[in-house]
Structure formats: C-alpha cells, structure tokens
Image (cartoon, rainbow, N blue to C red; front, side):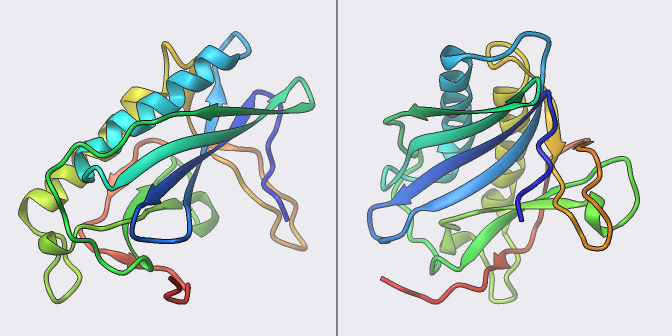
Length: 200
C-alpha cells in the first residue's frame, strides 16, 4: 500500500549506484511543497542538492544518476524525473556489504512509532566502523554534515520545497494520517542493516 501523498506534498526517490554492486539503491524522502508548484528546474535542483549533500560521504565509484518525483498538484498526481552525472567527492573508500547502511532518523513533533521515520543511506565506509557497528571519528562527523546538508540543499530556493515531511501509509484498521513535518534529520552513530540477500 502506498503512502498518503496529499495535495501540496511530494514523494522523491533518489537513485544511487556503486560500480561494484549490481543493484541500484533508492532513498525516499517526503516534502511539503512551497507556494508555487514546482517544475523541471526545481526538480533538477533537488537532485543536484542531494548529490552535493552526500558527495563527501562517497568516492567516485558512487553516482547519483536520477531521481523520480510524485507530486500531488491539487489532487492530481504528477510524475517528474531528473537525471544527473554527479559522483562522490571523497578519496577512495572500501565499503561494507550492501545490506549494511548508514541511518538517518526523521523525528517529528508527534509521539508514537508511526511519527518517526528513517532513511537508509547505502555504501557505508568500512574504515570508519568499529566491530560493534559504531561509526567512528570522521565517518560519523561526515554523516552528520550530510544529514544537515540534505535539508539545506533540497528545501527552499531553488527547489521550491517548504520542508521535509513524513508521508504515512495506512495501518489497518486505521487510515493513513496526514503528512507530518520532519523537525530535522538526525544521523545515527550506529550502522543499520536491511533484510536483503547479498546478491551480486
């Protein structure tokens, strides 16, 4: 079941690739749209901003090739797409297996599990992770910087987004609540794992 994408909100799917991994990673973010309906230039700016925010986490083997947006414009769902050629900006890095990721939390001003979101960032740098899964030194600092930069780079001018938002799915028998504004993106100092087989 899909998320509740109400009028004035946007679901953005940012695609990321690594030359050594066959599958593509997708990070999904929700946004509250600003006053004017966004167009291609705003969506292109969002992909560029996402790549710029995350570039320092990764080396040039990581790329940010495209993003897909579903915008609810006054009750009508529109699909937009951006393409890009940006790559990571860091020096060469060895990464963890693809089911080990960085984790960003999406807190809101409301209480309860359904009002706390998360996003998994792929291709975690193995040299900055200790044996307990804790990010060490510059790795955690870089993740904190990237988390702040995502909001700075993809919200407000020139993207036309007003804020980050948590878009909810239905939880039967309850219907999906209205989207919730995200107060910040908080970097976790522990890696996360996803239930994915290690395929090549």
